[in-house]
Image (cartoon, rainbow, N blue to C red; front, side):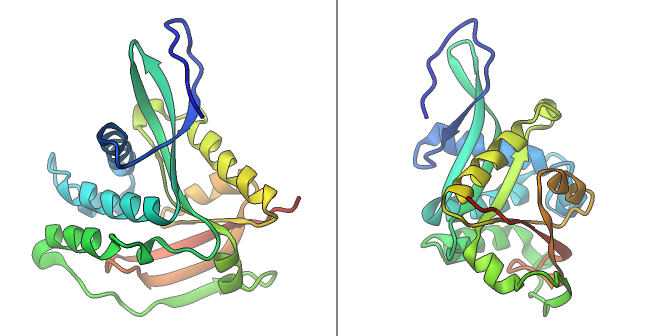
Length: 223
């Protein structure tokens, strides 16, 4: 999808991001890092004005996802410059960003920023599964959103919804569903308004050793 510059235009458009391009990469990382700066479940990665931990974690997710999936963004024109304000990362059915070629390298780079605070992953415990679905099959057969975020100053304008709709439309064409995990419980209500429902609740830790409760949301779609 391309955008034609127009000094009078205020329309927000969606664009595929190529992380091999320095500007796309830096803007995507900045947007996601700023987006998560206010999220309680990410607070341990922000040490005052030192955001290296948070950036390293964002890079792990974004770079790995881009190798097996796609990164899209909403953007607007600020004079001659394109400004990215919201970013989404997602993988197609059957893919996992943890299996991307660079995943081990970017994961290790993040873990090194934790230093002595690095912890080993704890066993995961499933606390709830939807009686309507087989959660493992659903997650394997669905598009999976790995990251989504909007810079705080652009919040409330529907930018994240615009990007989620892009993934939902893709899934509908292929007669599949969409999953999105969150460790921030209040966000569940937002996803429910978009047609998602709770698929699974899991306690324990992810592959980076972050102890948390994860809520997996699922939106079933049919042609």
